[in-house]
Length: 533
Image 1: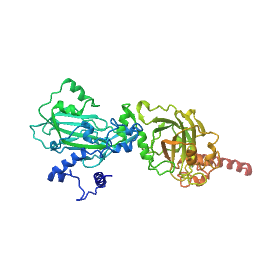
Image 2 (image 1 turned 45 degrees about the vertical axis):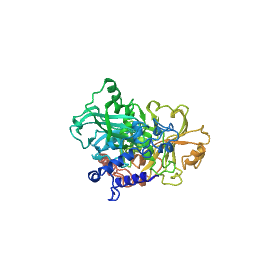
Image 3 (image 1 turned 60 degrees about the vertical axis):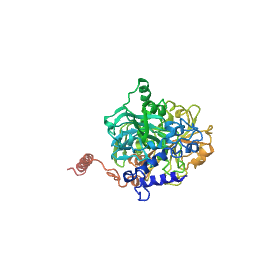
């Protein structure tokens, strides 16, 4: 790693943890802007020409030796290393550094709100102010920068300016504001209003804010109106600057933006991309489970739907009635479920979606899968351990994602945690060959049971690759106590501390009174018969 990149990363850590000292400061901090603007502008120019700084630079060839291997490697220019300047203006462009004389302040107000994304509701309760600093490696999320920012710079009100907001990675026009009098954006012609990034893959992308000085008022031809209105920027940026007769850029700023559920859901809504497995990968990679890699590269979304029927049962002397309903697991939100909703007879229905372009989301042509459900939190080592979990479900040789056509080696069994909250994982593996169904029972102890499932050997022996994960959390509740008692468990122990529990179960006051009257009536008859009274 070169010295400049190291300093940027150190500075980023300092910013994130609020530990910036007098020694390590941004050259574009407010104090430095007031005292040494030239150092800030020089740093911006240097960074804009650095081919090692952004994902489309020299690091791209290391990270993506095959440009088509993943969605996160997609690159319009996969065989050249770009700086920000060469990416925006072309590899032959030479930046006139002497023109960069203004610092373009870009400030976002994040706002608050709630949005849906990848099956979960996300709520932002605190609004923040974000001031972009291009000399820092701070990474933002699309939700935070979705609204048009405040953009200011030092200018004479008799001058006219243009701002172009440009996605340097995907070559998309994110905003064009022309005929700005001085720095009064509100009085300008907003030809194409700012629209925020919809970054839905992990590697941070770069969105640039470019300030140009106009030679006079711009009047667009019909041809250029059509070209500039196209978000996909079907034109050469150098040609656009020349046509508009712009000088500059005279100021630059940019931001790095990575994925979030807000952008992912927007890509789903417009039927362009499906990338939710990236979020699942990030979340489950922190679970510290032996059968899940620390940095999983999941490529399939696994939706799991339950439709339990209505249920009435008595547990620990209390009668419960549960309604029927249909719901999907929500591992990214509150993964907790009630055990009666995921009981054994509420057979789960999985649905698979491939990471990538939306129109290919259901394309599993030629692929075969194995689906497992395991509980690694079993308290008894004779039933399961972290390394050899309890097996709750196994379906192998699933053709092209159609679970109903696979071979069910073990039927689904609902949770019955006896001690505390347990995690139950649905694990989807892609097969390289047909799994021998006569051998699936050999991976439990004893064979053909659910206990001590040797998941590591099963995956290794069958050359399986983990491609999708879902999960829920269940804990002891009235239904698990009911099923445990029905299976011969010690009712007194299971129900200890539960309200209304007694041995035997108490009866209602009215029933008690009716029984007492009956007993009195019988006693009276006995007295009459025996003593004639």
